[in-house]
Image (tube, rainbow, N blue to C red; front, side, top):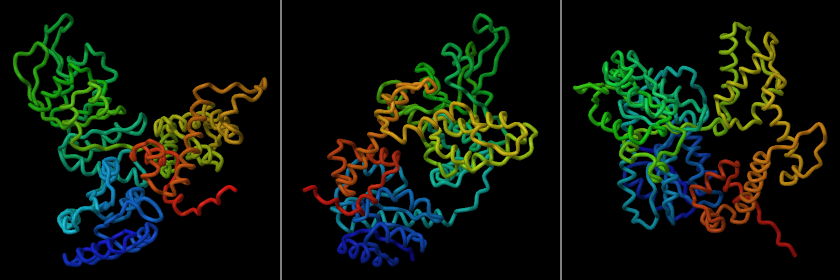
Length: 480
């Protein structure tokens, strides 16, 4: 007997779903608000949640990550009175099992309910604790845990993996971890930096060449694809692969064989492919910059790595880990952090992500040398300067900060920095006013702003604004 939680503010809908669940010989529990539903989900383990989108205290789509981050996350079926494509895409990408409109017959809920519970039962039956070799990957935040779950899934199979994420998020570390935890760990992990290879050398680097194949080919050379035989081929920055090579590499993926330059016979290579990019390949496909058929081949399993800002809860753990590693590397005694240093680290946005954090700590280590504690003064000058400017701008109107008289000791901020600060502040204030005006109604917010649901949710997440909080606030009195 499965435990099913129904979160919906319509009493009739809750009753119909409860009857449906119980007819399937499962137990149903109802909650009429998001707050009550989340409270119940935290107290008990549910196998499946029917989750409404429009609730009195917020939008159901916003709490999918919360439900998915539970110790034993339930399967989630979204139910909505007025579905739309953006909402469906957002729900599925966040881990929902299905997205169903309430206009459908209640009997049509039986199949997704049955399939979701069957999937969960089989997953639980074959679930085994996996001790992953993480090699520097760490983090307990929900976004990072979701990525580590996908890493374990990728390591257990042989499908092609596409790792996406901004520069510095750890794409190569994830690729190596997939290799180290796979059945190919004893073989080569071969890295191809597509962005660093000149276009005229990509073919010879990948495929190799025979002696005399071209001027200067004094001896045969084994290509990177052949070197990856039995192991893993990692195409870093695959979005930079030239168009001519995209077609040639697609054939290699299909046939698992290739012909070296100047060669007369096909050479087989049994490799596992992992690719990474910081670009939007789907957008490149739409613009004709990347082959659609190759894109489909690459994305059998996609791991989208979060920025350090999105996994801010991991920041301190990352700082301690890399500081200890750097101390060991330089032969120094372990160092501590002053409270002010931790405040500085937490206040920075880290556009360069974990790589930027590690470089900042490396600079701090060099500045502190044998001092036992790291202080903000040990951090790179650019970081301290940026945080000081942000502190000053935060105490006055960012749009007018650049108009203040420039004292001899203070340099005028760069135009791009001022523009970025002003746009972010105006954008945040607009979104705060928007959610306050619509009181949590996502459809009204999209209509007024002219934004799609996916784009609106993305901006709300970026600025830390919740629709559910706006829905709970009392209406402001009208101005007389």
